[in-house]
Image 1 (cartoon, rainbow, N blue to C red):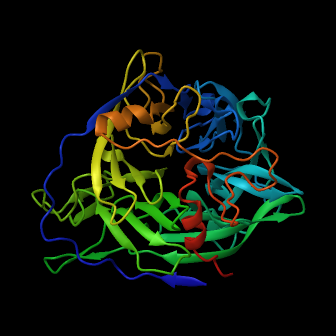
Image 2 (image 1 turned 135 degrees about the horizontal axis):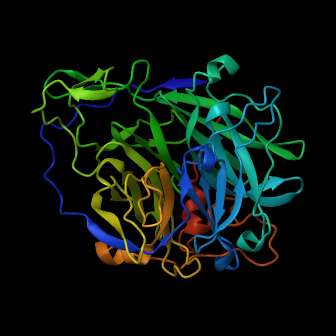
Image 3 (image 1 turned 180 degrees about the vertical axis):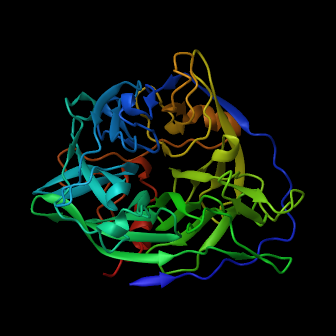
Length: 470
C-alpha cells in the first residue's frame, strides 16, 4: 500500500540568523585509501556502520560500503580485516552489485539462532543484501558471511529492464520496533520515494517481504507566492539518501539532499512529516544547464528562504542516544564540509556544527557522505565514536591523479568537549547466558545495544510504535 504525502508548509519569510562558526575537532585515525578505478576495483567509499561487540568492545568492527568495490570491514585501529566484492545477486539474472548504504540489525533470528546482521542496499539490483556478523567480530578470520536468500523481489521496480534505469535502492536504515520484528527503511535514487520492507527468514537465509512505500514532496510553496522546484537533472526528483531511525520513538530522520532534514513517524503514513531544517539555498530558483550539466541560478542575487546549518547536499544521518529522550541527531552538511547537530528530543532544536581536521599525517574530512555514531565505549574511544566518510581523500600518500575516498574515526568525547555536548555511556549490556537478542528488554522491545539505558527500558516498552501492516 502506497501513501502520498503532500508538499511541506511554506518556508519562513526570512532566513534565520547565521550561527556561530563550527567547532573544530581533530582525528589521527583513518582507514586505508579506496580508489575508484579499475586498479582499485572501482571502490568508492560511501557509508559506514559500527557494530558493537556485546562483551569485548575491542572486537567491535566498522563495516563500510565501497559501491562497485563491495564492502570493507575494519577494526577500531582502522585496519582492514576483510574485503567482500560486489558479487552478483543470488538471482537468475545474476547482475553484479553496487553496495550503497549499510546498517546493523541486532538480534535477528536465523536458522534457530540469534545473529547480528549487516543490511546493505544494492543499487544495481534494487535489492537488499544480508551479511551475518561473526560473534568474535574483529577477532574472526572472516567477520562477515553473506546470507541473502535467492530470488528476492525488486524494492522499487517491476522488472529488470526498469532496474537497469538505476532509479533503485539507495539510502538505508534498520528499524526494529519490537522483539522479533526487523525492517529496512530504504530510499530510491532519483525520486522522493521511501519504502519499508520486513526482513524475514527464508529457508535458512534472509530475505524481505511486506514492502510499503510513501512519496515525499518534490516541490514547495514559498512565502513570495511562487513554487520552488529543486533543480535536478531531467527526469530526476530531489532524492533522499541519509536515513536513521530513532528506535525508541519510531521516528525516521531522512535527509533530502537538496531540501533539508525531515522527520517522519513510522510506520510510513502514520503521521504528518516535518521539515526540521532546510538547506541554505532552499527556495533559490535554478535552471539545469545541459552543457555544463550543472544547475545555474536564474537570479544570482537571490537569497532564498533556507536555513544556515545545512549546505547541499544534506547527506549522512545518525543518532547519538542519551538517557530517555535525550541525545543528538547528526547530519552531514556535504557542501561546506561540516556536521550539523540537533537535539533528539522535542522539536530538534539546533545545537551547532563542527568540522573535522586531520593531524599527524591525516587529512581533513571533506565532502562527507555517510556517517555513523555510537555512545558505547569502544576500544580506545571510551566516550563513544563517530565514523565519517571523507571525499576526496588528500593525505600525503594519496595518488592525486586518482579518485580517492576513505573513512575517518573521531572521538565523540572530543566532539562533546568542543561543543559542550553531553556524554552518557551508562548503558545496559546483554546478560550472560540470556537467550534474548542483544539489547532486548524483558518487556519484549528490541533495542539497539548502543542506546540501552536502564532508566528508559520501561518507558520504551510502553511507547513502541505498531508494526507495519503488509
